[in-house]
Length: 515
Image 1: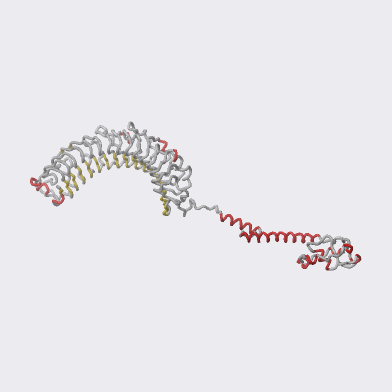
Image 2: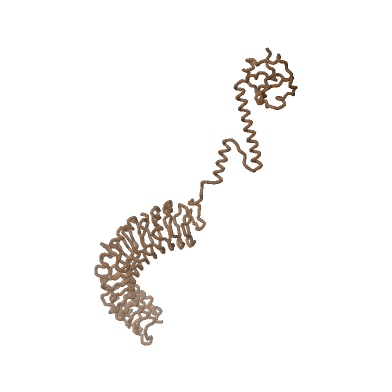
């Protein structure tokens, strides 16, 4: 038995072995079956590297008569067959990929690679369509706005909605003078740093802002003036310190509106329709606001001062209402009130009772201008420093009118009908600095004006004489007066008949203005 030749070995281990192996006229006797040694032979590197070629497999064609019968198929080791099949499939796939790569190169497409390449390509695909958006980020600014650090200025842009993408870290957002008619629910809940929000002069209604502000946990100042609101919002954040609702259509206010605003310091409700002209606000409607410092109810339709106001109020503005009386129940206890403005109402002397201001022991400024008072009110707090009684119906000033106001510094009595002032009526005001008596019916300068007076205005009266003890009184040498301005324009004074001694204590004639 002869061993298989090398030629047979190569022929067997190639990938494309023909089913009928043709020989070069090899006699039958020379064809032998492979031995066990041949079957167990391990593939050599040369065998693995051998590439099939058509030349080695093809033989010269012989006439049909000379073709031998197909010989038995030599047994090939299993591991050699598996390796051969794997190599073949790998080369087939590689060939297909190479063809696709060439086609893709022509079309300009990127070449396909292994799994790592696919992952990289997927990452690139995600990179071309990123999930990252600049909206709401710290360094983003909507095109309708101008941003300065954490201040976003979107005013006067004519926008109808809150601009999209305002950074979440914004502290001041200004949206006044636009056409915003609604605020999307929960839109502002992510603004954890927002302290100041201005929505003045827009088109907001009650329903369009419902639930819009309660989620802004750091909001301190909210401006909703000049809108179309008819009631006070009931879902305001607990952090709120200043709320402006001026120039709306407010006619309803409930105690529940303020239940969530214990920290409110400033509340402005001017130019609305609160009170309806016949009554005032519900009793103690503002009592939950235990920290309130400033309350403005100017130009509403209140017929009386609201009852049960918070004792913490220091400034109360009620100008331009229909108030006829100031009840003592306005403050249920000692109030911290410092400034009270009741100007341009319908107050009479009967409307200001003894108990009206009895609890206002810290009151320093009282404005009663433009009412219907016929006398200087009595029972005013002795703590007053400024009293404005201009534009009333007062016709005379008695000697005891200001007897209990030792701290009064500014007194306004202009535009009344005062024709008579008792001698020494102002002498009881030791620290009075400014006195205004313009547009009255005085025929002479009041006598014994306070020594500490700095300026006195007496224009547009009917004055024709200046008594010797008007400015200079208190003995033969009264000393130098503190007056720096005396206004006597538009009167009936004849300079030729003036008594020069009436001005001898003044710092000079330049202090007195006759023309």
